[in-house]
Length: 324
Image 1: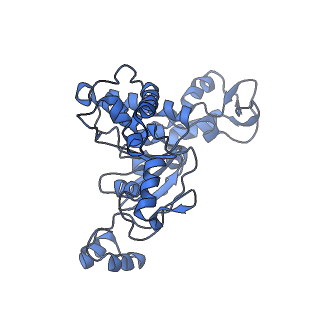
Image 2: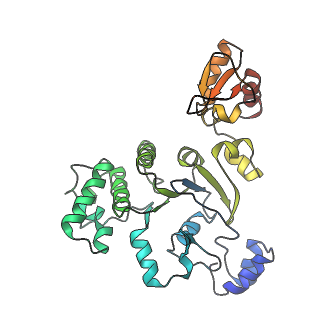
């Protein structure tokens, strides 16, 4: 809650008052309300919403960069909202890292010193922190730029420095608050691909904030759609597209090219196919030419080669008819 009377505002919200009613009665704005969710180890959890939906407030609460009016934030069973400043400072230094939309680099520090800043705060000696910073700079594709300064780099390269700085402390959880939204489209796509590559190697737990549904689909293992401070729906991209819980979610998914998102596993039916086989994670768009060439069902197999279902022409045809 934002405002001078948060207790009264919380009471009204708990009784079901709308955001507008709470604002009119108390002067308080509801940033986030009734939001509960878990993020699994190694998962990329995306919170997607338009401006004013509460997504940045949410990530600041979860990262404990802002106060929580009511509720808990737990990490490995420890309640971050109950910690004193000293304990919370240690958690922030060693377990959490954040990458912002605005890079926040120190202009007077070299790239390697920017990347090593978190380690410097921890009291790590210069040689050791530079060695670790060098490693992560190479990881994000900035080898050779260690002694440049931020103003000598492009926007995409500056964001890579921010990413390196976040990774250098070897955090358990990474928070991204619309980190790529200020970048040009091509650079933004490259940074998305880079994050996917890094996540494949490092398997960090990530909470990623975006207003772009296409970006959410590309990056997220699961996606939460947020509106007016609450979650409308949480699910995989396929679940949101095939089973939108509200009209608001349906609007976001309406223009998404479904055949580029849904996989064989999403559209398969019980039974087995013929001699042709596809993997469960093959996109529907790759199945269409196969079904046009031959109407016989196609066998769907899992990673170990075991048949788990079949894809037939009727099911895919119905999908193309019902979903834009």
